[in-house]
Length: 233
Image 1 (cartoon, helix red, strand yellow):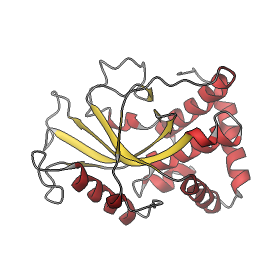
Image 2 (cartoon, helix red, strand yellow):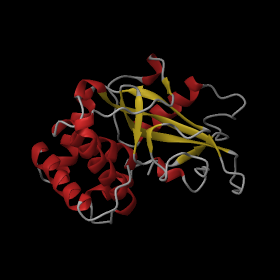
Image 3 (cartoon, helix red, strand yellow):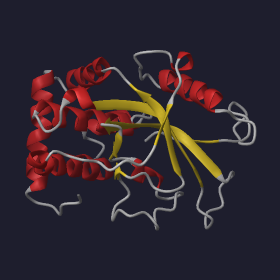
């Protein structure tokens, strides 16, 4: 998973003096140093602060959305060392990997309109739970998610459940489907769709599959899981 960074890290300065611009630059450098990419230099654009917005899925697509969303959430919590996902957790990429998998399951099989679905990269930040005693009271880290009509879709924010208080969140599970937990901030950029394709092709190549074979493989796994598990959303 993307490791969190203390806002008191000397590279980021302290919370009282750090700016969004400085934090974005720090995250951009960390992103590229970890071997990931972007379709533009973040320092040359203004980031978006994503806010809660009801996620409205077309009526005929709800079942497909639930199936693929649940698959990515459950798989992200339970993958083994032998699984494809494990390759990317080692270089800070769990949230990117599962965002890309979900993106293509939703687009390739016609669940959501590709023109309205965006892969986003940026960072999360929040105040650490009071019952935890870390080195700093605030935490930030690289993160990726999807945006559909400006509503956030995030299957991997659960990675922060040890330090972030999800207790008062209106979801039964630590995921985001439109409403962002109070106290959690997501700031980042909507990438060009070419990056989602480039990432997917790289994942497929690493598994010795074509792009189409890779997407179909994940659909088959999602079908199996959907038929044998509890539905989350």
